[in-house]
Length: 344
Ligand code: XIL
Image (cartoon, rainbow, N blue to C red; front, side):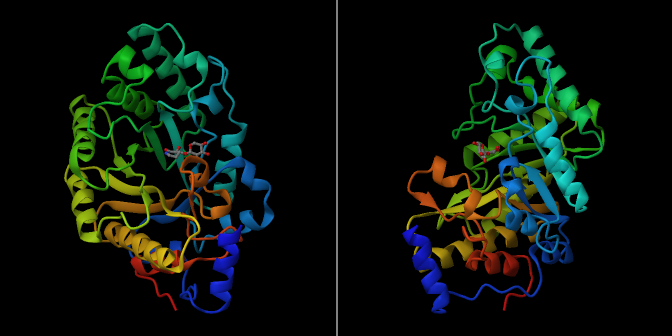
């Protein structure tokens, strides 16, 4: 609480750059050639009326990502029994606003129900389970997902495949298989591989390039690579380096997007850190704008009120462009400038 009081005091005293917007983030993004600027959201937040009012603001958000309710544990909690109500609620909200939808995510090691992780599978039976899951979920949302994150976080930091039930039972071919099942169920959705820490280049990014090539070589459809962009303040590469990494992917004929951006700060957040965060968000946005084939920019929820960061990175928070009181932070103007908009 203290850190937010001191932030409020600093804002009141005018010691922070005044967060003002000549245009919204989505307006700036689309004006400069991106498809959208967007945010993730999650069902428990949708009862928060002021929160939803800003979520509905299409000047800032032209796209919504379904934060949790399309994951395997939510959609198929018991085998072949599907539950879509929560995912439907987020998708319907976005459609009501004419916002694009990023559907998230089909095959991931995390948030899997026990029946999947503890099943006694063979290659053939787990492949059938994966095909059934992907087919049912993608078919349910057919025509409504602009993007699908088909495979999420399949890599370790050293570029080896992350151990998971799919890798150990099926082998690396689970990745192209997942893409081909998704393409069969909705040929028009843009199908993505999505991961974090690709932004620095190196072994993990090289391995992600290899995943794109492997899916293509298998004859399956892959349309894009999502750069999650979960950062600690001060560790964001400069925009030129970021653009080089993004371009190494678009050179393979796929698009790229910033899919889950947040920039965490050790609490309490200092004025200096908030200004650095604004620069970091700006560099990320500038990099995307500068790369033909970088189609959009999504933050992992928009307000510190609902960030996943404090729960996962103890001692850190303040990672998003709006504070806990839904007030724009300097990061908002940093993004706006990175998107070529005019911050006052
Ligand atoms: C996070 C959600 O925000 C949390 O609510 C949940 O408890 C765990 O998952 N990478 C992803 C997202 O692809 O799905 C994760 O979302 C954050 C990291």
